[in-house]
Image (cartoon, rainbow, N blue to C red; front, top):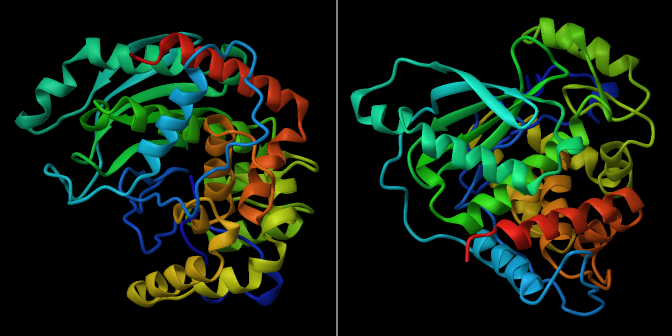
Length: 347
């Protein structure tokens, strides 16, 4: 369970803690879950440069162009509002994940207008099969549940969150109302996977104390104080973990300013300050959503790492893409995901 914001009573000793899922000036969902990506939210600050791109293993013909087109479509601001907007996310059905298989659907009580989507098991399986076709099996072993959700069209497309029974096991949620645009779906699934990659139990040791006492801020602060590294909310990041390295490289000098904004009690004022924060540091962020917090920043940077050519690194935003090139295992994983994309993206 993620912590959306810290209490105003936090002492200065704990001001480096970042909450997840805090609203920005763009349209985001402020519900539980590590990701609240809205198709309307992302705004590219500058085009990824085309130089120095070497096709990944398995890329063929038009694959680099397909990846860049996915990035262009998924990060382009949408006009208008969703026509089926609802106030809350509704879970339609929850599946148990066992490797590549989903089973044991648990159907929730839903309004009659959502029953057709709830019962469309072929569509549910198609979404799941597409996800596992993109992401290699050895990199998604932390997923134990898969849920079909909706909050109406053009809002939260997907999210990941720790399961209710085990903090080391995660659930992938996908909004069935938003799956028609496969570029948006592909980008968001890759973004969601970045959270699993950077916050999973092999990178962040889950805090049982926080997991079992999600509303107890004293326990949360005790866990933060005991962590020698970055504490993203789910637990203490391991030394030299991706998220810990990323945070200290790109967020150390921003933490006091960001926390002051994050602790703003009035929502309208906080959103204004968050927008001003992004505008002030545009050259540091690949999208406006990346400025939400370091967890969203690393996930957006990962998506650009996957879908865009290798940049020169002229800005801090581009350096965040280059961050992943420092890890040979991630470069190899990028190649595999691109190869899977080439084979499975609908033409």
